[in-house]
Length: 251
Image 1 (cartoon, rainbow, N blue to C red):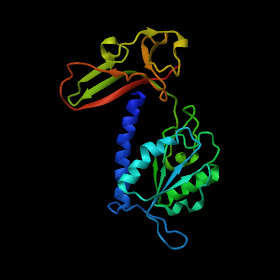
Image 2 (cartoon, rainbow, N blue to C red; image 1 turned 120 degrees about the horizontal axis):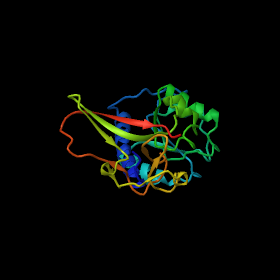
Image 3 (cartoon, one colour; image 1 turned 45 degrees about the horizontal axis):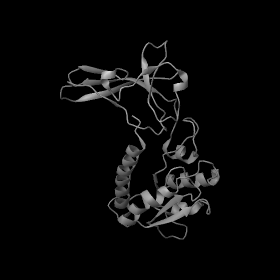
Image 4 (cartoon, helix red, strand yellow; image 1 turned 180 degrees about the vertical axis):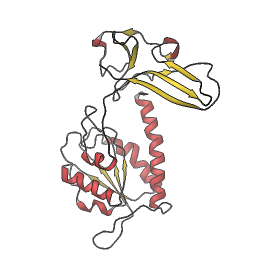
């Protein structure tokens, strides 16, 4: 489910607390990650934070990430890729932290060699914590090759959900049709007008392809929405359920 910007920031803050707690534990020795030996025979136990001072989201580092690093006492060095290149020696750090969204979406600073240095460092035992969730301009083309190398990311076409089913431990199935008004909050009006499928209007769209026979509730995964969309049902018995979504590809 796509949420509005305030919900996303709250989720990012919660995720940040979890990841930085893990990071503090690893650097303090409670968890001991593999640390690559530097060329001079010494070990580093600090982090390097990659930022881009020319990025539109650069301020997020100082506002959302750096206060946690300082509060938890994590030793770190800030590397501004706009002024300093990422060199092979990045593998000497215990952890690489990508410090904000849109690190280099214009491909102006991180070239293929620098991305290889990051991927090689992780392959050699350096940790990676990535706070950049803007990874593709169109849902199919990645901004950064090193993340694909590290995580094995792949991209698939966007999907619209038409229903959600709860399968109980007794075999009972409860289906919620997302287009039905009594399951929606807020209620949406069905349309078949293609111009209303506006990617950046901040609104959910209940769109009907006539050939499909039922509408779908749509929004882009990177769209900033004015309100979250909730689907609900009453009289669901207590129990353990498997949640199954029924996606349908836009035509």
